[in-house]
Image (cartoon, rainbow, N blue to C red; front, side, top):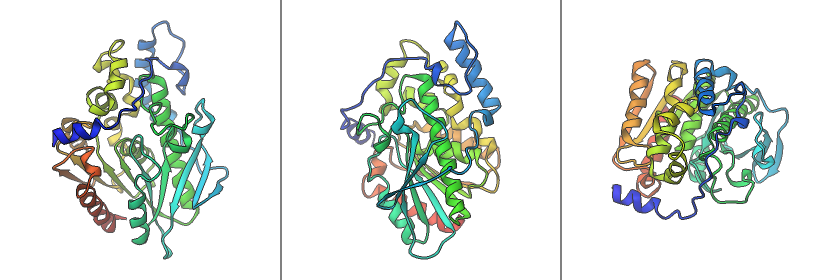
Length: 332
């Protein structure tokens, strides 16, 4: 299975490394001026973890929503990036033919293309659940370079990576508020890989979500980047300037492990983990599982005998979808 994981990962030859940068100008709230960027980031990250509401500000419902045709809508993001294209959150809607109060926000993986998770969205709609597929920042039409990859979303620019995740979480919460305005009062999240990380961070900050389905989960954002086979090009830029322990501390505000205690006990969560995952190493996933048990949160852990890339290959993808639908039938 590990050989297959490496072979599938090696098919992507377009990875673009960005130079290391502290990226302090991207941080909001801004850290105080400092001669030592690393020290400033350490303190800033600790402050955010202790008081996350200053970083994960509730954006409320979007001020307006534009219809773009083909069942697509977009709205302005409450968190702004330097690239204009990233600042419009985009939803593709898959509406059930029957009236429904149930809806799921679908967050695909890092570097997803326009068809990623569309099959799942259609199955949700057929099951009487409206599916709203969110395009993550710097993906697809939100990319400033018309690139099929979203390397700006996770890169060796420390501050920009933090800001992108902050924007994505804000977009998820704004999309949830819009779905609620449309009459959906039972709303959940299903996220994969990076979408799982963003989905959980939103779940932790937004108690109104009824259910979370997290496909590939991990504890520390920095450790995944440092150890995962999908981000070796990012680590190559980081390791000349930072240690693994430092990167873990810098990216603490976007590491799910720090926010498990904020999830309400009214939210049911499915944690899907690949036993042979080389992108989200299994021991990091286990640490996340233990945190859910520690806080006594309603959840189910499913450990499957495959990995990250192989989860998108038949029949593994079909088995995963069946488990997801079964969970939603029970809890949404």
